[in-house]
Image (cartoon, rainbow, N blue to C red; front, side, top):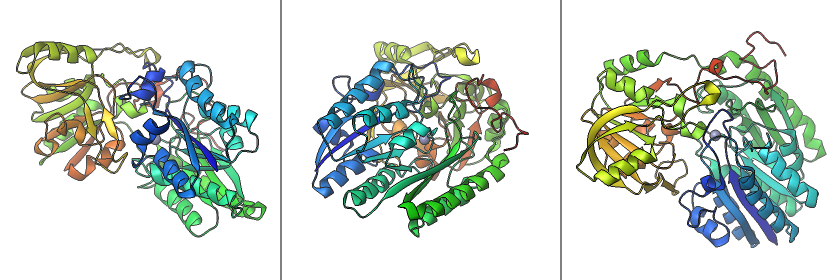
Length: 498
Ligand SMILES: [Zn+2]
């Protein structure tokens, strides 16, 4: 047997000014292109990622594996058409050469320069040349589901955790069903539905209510054989596109399983809709949050700037939360990373031990929100310079090597600030440890994240304080000019009915 597999993952924040060229899918990869074949197996094999599960399943099945390209770009603005073509051409060429099955590790919320449904477009292209090919698709929990994605998939599964610690398991679930189908032991039929609601990312974690009981029922239905697979997708709200919403996707076994799957779909979606007000996050003013953090005893106190979260498309250079923390006199802080390659270059040129004054961060303006970049003038000593690389040890993306590019630590006395050259969310303690900062020894850790930090930081946190800073991942929906989303849509239209 011959299998084709590919990974192209991008969560597109259509309000983000950060561009997404092909190089964003190849950070740390020699040659500036996403790894393919043996290089991709070397980079991702054995890690907690979806593509690693496909690699293992191909081995287990004794199949030849053609791994066309594997790239995972940090969330940002729409993907360059050329980057989309790079992946699509390789996948289609490999399929055209002939194969028995295709395994796709995708995100599900990709928008390209010319398409609002990147994954749907990719799957459409495959279907045009291979209408009957068995295709397994594993997706992120933040998928904005489209009919094109579902029409083209044979089997589909989504993460059921957030932080996403089940990437491998999710792809394995999809892949195993497809293998059983190839053996004539399963007959997957997809059943799906959606409710018009933008669930807030800070209120949608399957680990807590209101999503927990819904996701638990999905898991149970899969475990007891009601369906072959059951997934609920929270959706990604920072996308001004027509196919947003909360989605349930069930994979029934044969014609006879469809009625059961449809009943489950309605019941899961009804429960989500009934609890819609619980999926709304109420924003606390930034100064109040910092003042509250000041009164807490025992560190580390993790301050989470979710208005500028890289893994939701943030620019990682908004300085408002850092400025407010310094203004209110917080000290013994580790901060970062802040994306500012120019300041990194200045610190490298000055050298370790040098005193520098920087206009730090604020390099990026955010026209979609009418915000100008605001650098923070700050002085300190250059403490360390690093290559920005470390291996993840927390439960999310375990074993993967991350790359922040050349990075440097600025010590202001009040704070040690890590400044980096490539955007990457802080979710693993390696972000500070690789730069010689021991996070457990700090009173405050000010990071830019939303939920994924819980994978690495929650176990050491004595307190967690969420900071609603400005940025393109702000938790205040009223700042975003939604035009393409379907209306009415909850909670943009709070009084709507179905
Ligand atoms: Zn996600």
